[in-house]
Image (cartoon, rainbow over all chains, first blue to last red):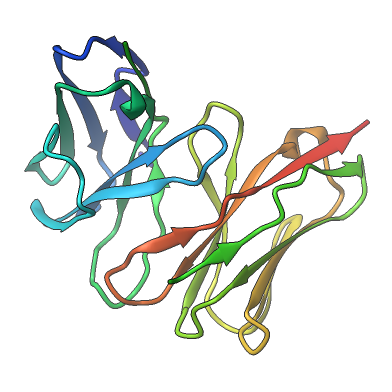
Length: 116
Length: 111
């Protein structure tokens, strides 16, 4: 199994809603990532989890709350989002996260989020 | 500030031709280089990676790295319409495992 699975594929939410994005991988990878991508822009790193612990938070607003329940699962909890948060949210995984080497990232298919 | 530069394109090549995609980077400490292919509305897919100077071939794809000149390129031989996509260059410095992505080059392979 070489897939990173994300659900849902599409999400429309209001600014007062609370929703969650889910990501799952069964490749035995110990590092998982959340990226945000706007149209015609490169992916921007949001969070990195290594061995289920948060290693990097790229100064992301607190309305985005990541959670890593176990080594296979990664969630992104959303609350009180703004319309400018509308984007493609990508989950990725890599074998490890060492801080000294750059691992190959495997991306999920993404969640297209629209905030009304 | 670490930068990765790519020509946004579109780069248009006829079917069967060689497509050449280029990427330059500013951080001389960069150690790992990746090419991702992204179809419209889809997620990036890793197609090549290279760590050492020189060429690395995989099927129709060849990655070329020149650290002295700080550029990395991707050659696609016998281009097919299915190669039409945006190609993202990503560069890692070896610290904090944070990749810096370029803005991508859109490739169009015409019939």
